[in-house]
Image 1 (cartoon, rainbow, N blue to C red):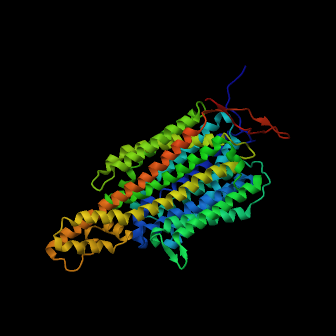
Image 2: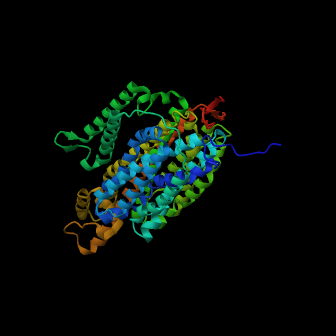
Image 3: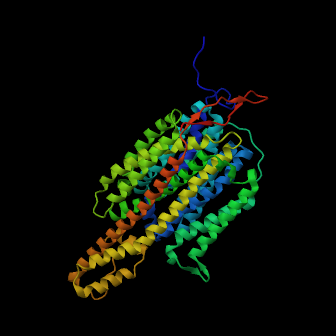
Length: 560
């Protein structure tokens, strides 16, 4: 008599189900992903606390994303060499301790440095989660496991602003970091108890490649994000913003050339990109990271500083999307085992593109914030349907020998997209503010008596984007009155100034969000270019000695 049993794990778990590895992995991954967006809701609070502008606060996110992105290739190799378990556990400890350091930060510099260390911990953990799922779960249940993993990513990304809003308003901005400490401790207990020790592979480390990748990415991100600070001109002496950006591109080009020369010993094994599915999955992943992280920065400032919402009310805008994402992701993961995942990914990117164009069209200084619930709900649906099928497509090109490096490459491309997206959004928003607010001021000046218009416009000409955001946050009295304005006109001048700031900021936010929509559309095109492939579940083959199976390459069957 036969009975139906769950597929066995591909490694010896001493009788446990492979699902027992997920609590520790998912909790750790949840902290990593939520910290990409939870800080956005606190941007106005951090500006007021540390008395800094938008660009300085932008580094709180960019420092985290930068160290996270550039180290993923290295930590993927560390997982191959020393095993995913010890690298994941070590990263969890680093991340948890760095979170505590963020909470006690006395200055913006301290906070940025602690966030950079957080990124190191996150980089140590992330490749191990995908690699361990790929190596432990049998092919028939791998899609469902990646679906749960993907739901964690999607829910964390969208729920970050909501949790951040509640913590900022009720407990203080410090708690958006302190909350990681108990979660990290619980994840550490689960990980030490249930994560298995997997086979290791002797890998060499490309030290020069690591240095080039870190230096190139830093130069590129610094140039993009700080460009508006130096008016896209000279930084100091012969050093210019565009010179820094150009040098970053050259260094990254040298890194790519070196990787081609090193072959399988490279940090970035170029042979993986010979697989069309893996190449296009990485292109879509980069677009996903760029736009998802980038969209929340201008949106959060707009909701709080322009529409005047509290952190909790601003965060509630993303609540329906978070719930929909959590419901859709496991379904999408299971569905990707039964139909070609390409079409699920295409559908998700289509939802992203439509929702962000819709969101941009509805942003204005007089808008009701609650009308944004509809596009954000559609955005959440897109999130739920993209993450796990896209990961499943990337994993289908990997086997147990390339799982660590492949997971590192896939996650690196997505996070490189995130860090460039974060820097580009900060740069675009701050650059456009000076133009859009000046244009709004010109319009507002027509409502003043002719003799006061030059003074009104002159006052705007001497304000920076940081002054604009401060004026919008602190109300009409924050606008410095030009000399010679009589008392009976002062109130009108202040109200017109505030209106100009609000209208100008709304216009700049719209233009910034349109960039995210365009990048989502690029991700959609990359997904459409993939072959229609149904994931074929091969059987694991035994290995000598212990009778424990190892994952075989997951074959993709072309359907058109």
